[in-house]
Amino acid sequence: MKLTLLNRQFAAIVGLRGGVLLGKRLSLGAALHYLMLPVHIDPQAPDPVRALNLNYAGAAIGVVVARVRQRVSFELLTLLGGGGACLQNKTQGICEDRNGFFVAEPEMYLHVKLSPFFRISVGGGYRFIAASSWSGPGSWRLAGPEATIMLAFGRF
Image (cartoon, rainbow, N blue to C red; front, side, top):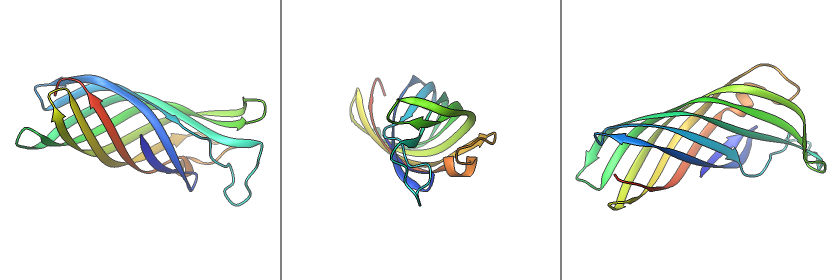
């Protein structure tokens, strides 16, 4: 789960990430993220009918940069991919306007291994967005800082 700013508003993004850890140093995988609740298109004048929605996915590449004993590690991770933004009509459940974008999301994680097959992670980063112009918010309003909490299952 990511807590972030989207269009100058607090938002929560849920996601799934999977991959393989090579030599306990390099991780290769993919991730999918989806905005939990759409945000207002104009934070100054909320519209009860229309809202901004967002989702994205991509390849995730990480490198463990430090390990403290066997339980704690620090990882630099970057997601590179694409996604879409939608001006959603909440009453009809349809997108009135869409726009695709490129996303780059560098992050730093602290992983704490609680068992051989479970760890909890906290992280922080920034979501960079490059999108063409459309009737919705510009790229700089779709980009933003984020804090992540993750429950991970696997062989670490």
